Image (tube, rainbow over all chains, first blue to last red; front, side):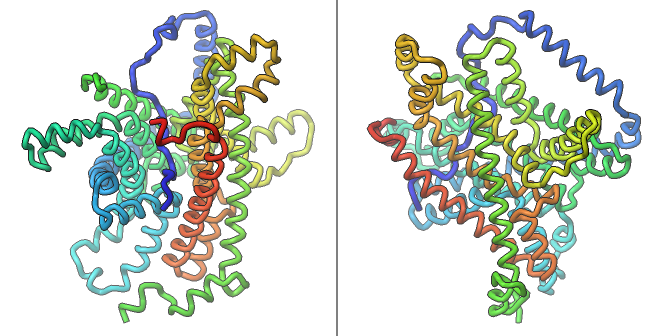
Length: 279
Length: 250
């Protein structure tokens, strides 16, 4: 394995507070007002000239899809993060027997498209399972026949792969002196990890975590390709039923914009909770 | 029985299925790979052009250009690629044809290749804008001021000073974008363009050897990534010549 990281995670939306105050100069500059007017005119004309009468027929379905998108997002981000911590730790300071498999896992996940991973799990594994009678007889079988466990598994593994790399960097960047001081105080290794190492690593990784959460949201529509009914798949169903091209897609885009806004807002709140005075 | 049936075909059948000659599906996979690489190269190049313009617009443009660039990057980075691809792919071709018809021209058939490159290039452009903007900002500003003091025209300054000086700062981000663009080509499978992922799906569906073909396609993608990494490493060494290595700089 080469030393160059395959993919340095990008900070999608900076969640740090705006540093230079000169840009705060105000939303109400003349050109901004004109732009806002043009923007609202565009939105207004889409509302007025396009057909939205299908909305009330599909209201329930849209809410179901929205809910499924959100819970898949939350479940995979939480599970993926829980998996990413040991992955990062193994790569940052684990023995080779743990570090090498962790690095291979991250490389494979980040080197292949999510769509291939998703289809490999759903169609590939899904086509293998029925051959084994003991799997068909097991208690898990009713779940294994549905699509969502594969969606959650694929998205979790993907998030863990990307995040494991981030956490590796974050663990490695915590100053050694902090850990030595903790050891000098006689803390046990697990206490050091819980009290010193993990919190500081998370704080360092937080801006990237926010970006990765947005990227994860943007990956969720892929689960529609394996028949999970999420927001995206509801929109494609509306398109098939009503033969409308633009309206459902525009609504979909607006929906994802709002969710992205909420994610960035929440991470900003979390960031603000942490007193930032790192040396 | 259960031990050998991990892959439905027998072990010798694997090579038959993957062989590049017609009974096998290897040729289809390789053709899909070639299409994927074409789209990735095209969209990455287009992303670089848009990104350079966008970065200049964000840094040196007037207030309106700046706000428009900000709206572009924010929207593109917040909306899933799949939705953008659908919007631009269907709506874009539809719009072009309507405009052409309105102006009295014939409808044109936009090939999947061109549409894919344009759509993914548009998405890449937003990310490239941010990468290049950050890279330009990390050039020592004295160099730019000196160039301006010597009376260099903006285009000469861009060619001689700004672009070469920002390259080492931009390379990690651009390498990232290249890898993302190779993987994003798989999204075009959803709109029915025959790149590697869709070819794989067809091969898997026809032979029922789902596991085998998806693993094979994954291996091809992984090979592209690892191969690119090796080259990117060399380019990075070349671009950073004369500068302290990344480790020392930290």
